[in-house]
Amino acid sequence: MRCSGADARTIAARVFRSGEALRDRVATYGEIIDVDGAVIDRGLALAMDAPRTVTGEDVVELHVHGSPVVARETLRALLHAGARAAGPGEFTRRAFLNGKLDLSAAEAVADVIDAESRAAARAAQANLAGALRDAVDGVRAALSSVLEELAGAIDYPDEVPEPARERVHALVGEVDAKLDALIGDWERGRFVREGLSLAIVGPPNAGKSSLLNALLGEERAIVSATPGTTRDVIEESFAIDGVAVRVLDTAGLRASDDAIERSGIERARRALDGAAVALVVVDGSQALDADARAVLENTRSRARVVLFNKRDLGAAGYDARDDGERDALSGTVFDGAAVDAVRRAVAAAGWHGESLDFARPHLASARQADAVARAREALAHARVTLAAGEPVDLIVPELFAAVAALGEITGAAATEAVLDGIFSRFCIGK
Image (cartoon, rainbow, N blue to C red; front, side, top):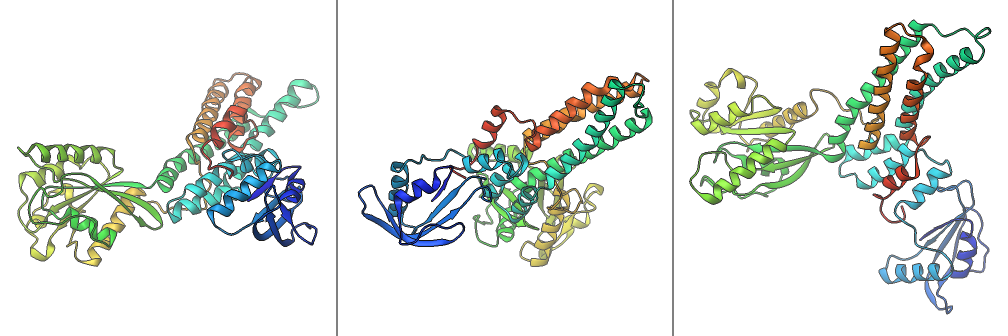
């Protein structure tokens, strides 16, 4: 139980009894007592004095046993002693307000908590360590230096020369290029955090469910030689290079008179439309039928991986494949090497051939991406003004707007409404 604030030690003295006085950063053994003096539990109290604490305030932690009853009664004792329950993200919000971390790092705390993959956790830790703050502060500093020069030239025109137009134009372009890279990392960072969506599609009896089981390493989907066994979309997840992949096994795509199967096929088409990557599976052991050719033709214009399955039974379909499938894989889902090849191909399609640097600063929310977009819009107006040969000092409002927008990312220019929106998604107290 963590209590943070100016009265933390006073409140702790009302619920913790020990023969020793609490000392800064020294664990003390004693009893946790209720309002009547009855012992709730025996445990440790750890006092930490401001400002060297996580919130920048005095903090006292009570370390008790993990029984829900003990935890509940300890909380009741603290509330009766004068504390109140923390709101969502309140400790992290206090840390931000007391200068212990910037707003981008505060948001990264929530991302660490919500991380569902090793990659998402590593990316969040990078921002928590200040990677995004450093990148944004560097850009803001460059723009601020130009603003300082322009302010001096405006206030003291006879003493301070106006900065050269060409240099200002070049600097604004360099800043915009850095912001453009951050926007690109926002797109990549989204699937690192949320997972890459992958839809397994193909005609019936091609081996889609068998491939799902092979990717998961368990018998998750029912496998049958009877076409149309899969009637609904099955969603599971696995990891590639630490990145979560949300995989959807779908009903076989074909023409059908069965109303239930048609419903499953329609759901499969919707899953395909919403997936980042399509994993197309066809029977490559025999000549391709109309259903297989239709699936291949309809997915050529999107990110996909094609597997001609059942290589152990033949390769007639694979050998006769069209030019659109020249880079397709051929193998059997019961061969570990073939499944590994599918994993690598999915990664290449999902990551667009790039290696993922999880330590690189990245935008972690739509709020941050919107702030960068507004900064770039202001810089675009500034570049138009400079290119048109207008006086350099006319770009001051645009530079101020860009600096202010970027300040929202780190919290240098965040409003109470912005803070409320950010911390509302935190778990209670964190």
